[in-house]
Image (tube, rainbow, N blue to C red; front, side, top):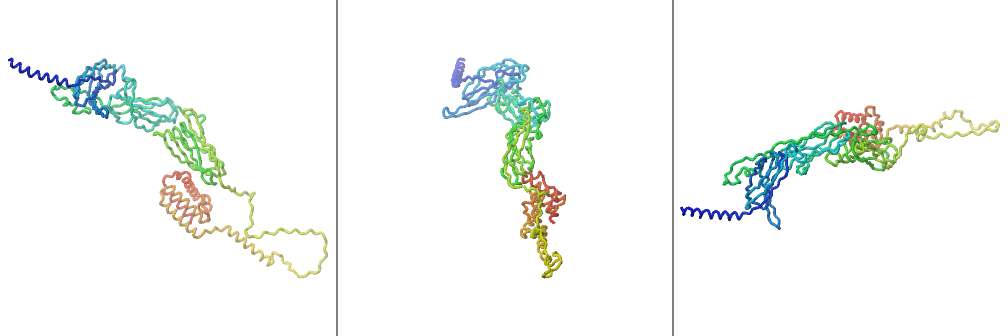
Length: 601
């Protein structure tokens, strides 16, 4: 018996001494955990973090069990850093998710567990939980699971006024989530632009952190009255913690054989589809005033600046001046039409072209440029003046801006048509002017009768004598030649005529195949100019539509076709629009080609 006791004592004592020695080799560290919120509401999700500096080995993380709190996790992360001064450093972090089930004050007890070669001892932490009914949206007035707000810069606007609108989404930072679809923005009585991509950030409201996403757009009211902007809803997916299965574990089983470590990414969470909704906000919309509305107001609403310039500042009579008119600022640029010519007398203008360069993604800020070709038809000393009218919603009144007076010099003279008062009938070329009558001397004496008759002369009248008739034949021939030359069509140089005919054939051939309206009407106008040049001998470049109609003796239908061809060609040259034609109908193509060929035959 004594021998047995001695043998057992000799076995247990060394084993105990070995345990004491091993325990002495383990460092014990006291750690203070942190709660993401010290005060929460029932149903909130709170993070409970335990930081473990200097830990790089395995962590035997404990399970939290507190009556009245659902505890999930932990999720373990390891962070390694290195610098030349202190060398390599490691830190492990345990993150638990806690959801209160009822109101009250809860104490998370101290935890003791092994991490690497260290023994970790945590301090206890107190969590206060409010009743869900007393604060249904948690701290800050927001639902921690997802809240949507619509933000407008003001509550009153005018019809046509462009307003920026923002949709804010807030989700508790303790919840892992992701957007499933972009937000919607419903409602009637306004138009809206495309929503921008969400801009993400983190905000703090009354002591709680939220993930914030902001979507931006613009709206434009189209009717007066009270308009509701919204509702709006956003679909998202949230990673919701689920209950951890409880199991009785053999104390000799390895800790890392647990299910959590076999599936460390989401073992205690499940993905759920969520929807955040807001009913929207109200906007009072006023009609544009009728009093003081300019005649040329096109519906532009905003704050704009208008300027104009022209080039060149010296032109010949009949040459175009290009006016560049700029409207910049903010507003509904889709209703900004071309400025209006204040006094069109003595100007021939063509349709304006426009180009818009936005300064934002919604097109509510930028510069819209118009180019207008105008041709002076009388002597001008200033370029044409244009005006632009708009309604300023800030000043609440109509404004009219002018391009100003810009100097212009027009060279060349305008030949007025002859009037009956100043018509002079010219003598035929080569005709001998009639001699002025010679006054007879006044008879102031009586002469005696002369009986010496001398040579006997004929009494035949002078205009019947042969010599007089022969003398008058020369001026008659000259007069006839002048008349014939006046009405005879000028002869075109043979080589020039051949070249023009080849060019006319080439233009007609091009017209049969051309699909571009600008090029087609350019070829048609050139072919008509050449037809008139072959008849009149003039330079084709100086022939206009009126000359073509007169020289080719066009009937009413052909004259209308000719005027249309030159008008479209002019718009293509000076307005850059090609006459606003989209394609060339086959009937139009055949009609124009047939007109040119018939006039040329």
